[in-house]
Image (cartoon, rainbow, N blue to C red; front, top):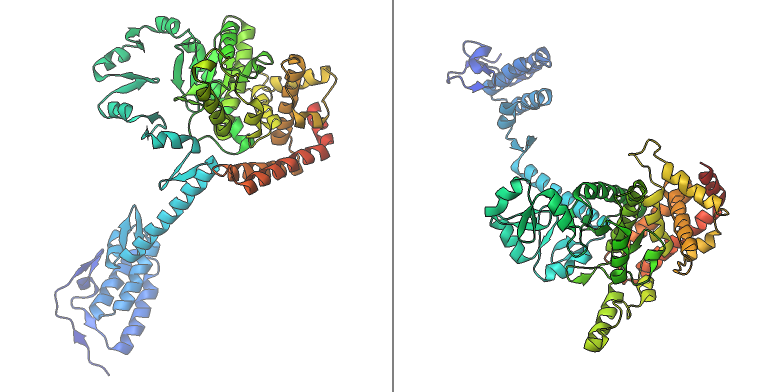
Length: 508
């Protein structure tokens, strides 16, 4: 029989127990006996962490490092927050999580970095962004980046001079810069209008002119408007709502806020159209695509409408048209015609002073503008009509009033036109009533696609969204454009095949 030896070293504290707690002097057993004794003690300890700590100390006294580590691991399993047990095991804590070693932590951080990079790439592609100097950017932002412009945390672009102002304590009231020594005036509720500080009523009057509208940055859009501030906030809400619906239709969002112009009267609307409506379609509807609208020194296009706050009908239609205008701005940001604008600019520069008396858009090639688009006109205008008149109006007691009214309008005029006519989608300033009807019908088709619940059509719609996403940043790739065209044709054919479901959708 093995002799019993005695450990004469000083007791060492581990966790909630010490080696002395296992006896006045810890006995070191012979190897064969320690294994049996360990099994007995381990069984007795069960899931009691205090007893397991005593066993840890006993194992330490016996020199059983492997079994001691096993007990510590058992403690961690029972109590994942036991810091002492983790530390004795050599674990490393990071951001509230324990890792078995520095190497394991490093591997975890590298994995997180790869996942974050992959997620950032996925989100960027979903938005239609492209790589530019080791970063993901909206293609429309590349000219700004090349000029040295800087994007702030809230998504606004600033030239270096503006950014320096921000760093030096200047702040913005809407898009107007306020110097540090003038911030007190803003805090008093005044508005900076040119070089003056005005009360809200006077500021509303100041911004009621087309040449100096309010410029209000919202959650999703940049609103230019001559409305009074109260109605401007209502219009902004409608624009933001439309933005959410548009994302459902095309699957992605612009990288920067699209600009929308809401005039405060039909007279202003007509005056504005005279300058920026180069195809005359402002006469067809209460909102139009402003081809001649420039922003940041370059042609951007965008939606324009009017909202007459002086009548109930003006407000009611303003609610609808502001959504329609948002769609044109949203889609132009995702699907621009940069080559058409570049060709137009070149022509104007070549004409020089001799072309100064020509109408603003006289040399603009409207056909080339639309041919450059990725999305067909029926889908673009259908999206605009959907967010205008086929959406769920949560602010009304009858949330589907616009849809019912729009479908009744189609039915009362002889029913839905042949689908081929909608796919061709030819608007005409000489037939404003027919063009308005065509826009309405395209909205119905989009409503059926996104809300009709027809599985085959929904599947084709997903294919279109995926192809449109793939085309972002690769517009000049023939294969990409061909794939998108194929997906669009597939959607049109599927709608044709399910025309009975479309009719049923119209019946509600």
